[in-house]
Image (cartoon, rainbow, N blue to C red; front, top):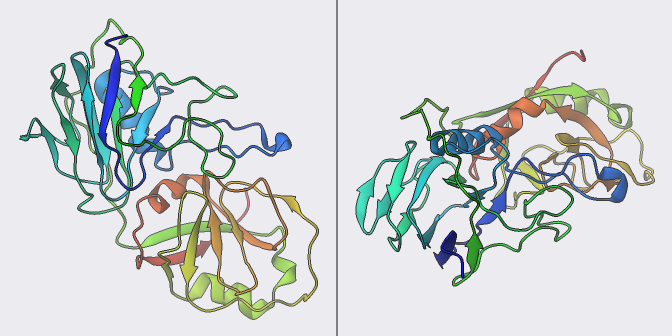
Length: 289
């Protein structure tokens, strides 16, 4: 039994293994998946000296607790939360040395939704289509963590981390998503397009890794027919029959039959990963490049 492993003591409501995902397989019906807050995942890897593509843990709301079988360096960032090692407070957003057998507890998010936990060497579960990411829609990759699970770890780099702490934006008080119109904006009335970019929306509690659902005014259709299924991209703003926009996130389906009124700028989606239910959402129209 290898000592390069993490034993899961408390899995939390939803903790998954994530890396940079598996883009490029949409033609096979495989979503891209990967860390929803990619900058936060890259940051914790940097703090422990991992390459950016190393797999990390993505927690949701209430964190997790793990026990390494050998001494490791860890870092926690993303949603601010308390961090303890064997019950003693440890820094958030900075590298922490955890002895073999000690309990690392990542607490509930104080703001935002998702915290990221990097361990020196990275989580070394078997890759699927080049990625170790859990995909909740297709079921590819490792299953969400459960109490008692054991996760293998890779070997750490010989060069230690050279970063003590770095700044990172906090969870948004207002989520601003820049959007370009189309490809099916002609399926909606001119009034619906104005509503999308001028009305106030809020994040729905029904949001998940597949899509950020919104609450607010319905968008009126100009075309009442149905579309055949067509390709969907990351950030697509799809409008289901209730008329309320849904922004597709990392585990989104690769095809869909509801019209897409706009597409959000990818760089804005990391903030969506940290937008709790009730957060105001504003769609800001920008020109296509």
